[in-house]
Image (cartoon, rainbow, N blue to C red; front, top):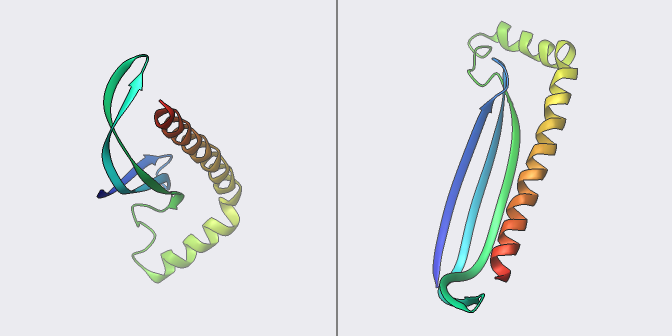
Length: 116
């Protein structure tokens, strides 16, 4: 069967400093044509094994504004650790919840599609 690799990356700006990055890597192995019967109708489809790597990241300073000079990089460390830490934790928590929801929806879709 066929082997297919797909990589999707989605980025969403939260603020001028933070953005969510969700990355999906699909690896489909042994994909072959198949025929299924749905409500008495024969339909063509594919079958195979699917592996999905799902990664969600809260990206800080995504425009690299704090990277130019060592002093700015040092100040960024202080900013992240002491000033904006609570906000960062909230954004991370929200991202974990959203990513979990997305992944559950993908699993439900694949499960539903696989059973037809």
